Amino acid sequence: MNNQQYDFSQQDPQQNAQQGYQPNGMRPKAKSIPLCIILSIVTCGIYSLYWLYCMNEDVRLMTGDPSAPSGGMVILLSIITCDIYLLYWMYKQGSNIDMLKTQRGVPSSSTGLVYLLLTVFGLGIVSYALMQNEINHLA
Image (tube, rainbow, N blue to C red):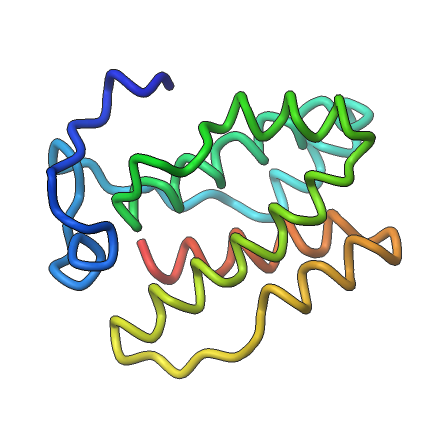
């Protein structure tokens, strides 16, 4: 997906999320977490790059933030920085998900820190699964 498919409004991203703004009426699709995990293992992590791309685009779509990096940029920066950018991204996505949950009246916690710590200790796929679970519930 490229940036041209999203018609971001000129409003503030926080306002967009509060109003349930979905560019072009698009909503993120719920994904099967077990299937994503199995495909990531079977493809030796190649599918996890696609999964990362999809999760980034889904959260970007839900927040309506045109300044957020694209999924391709996240993957590129993660590869170039030897996953240092991925650690930042995990924390940032957790914060974005917390913001979305708060705006929808759902209690939230510090999920960004959880995603970050799991990834630091080599359990990135668990972070992906938890993040996808939150995206599925918010979608």
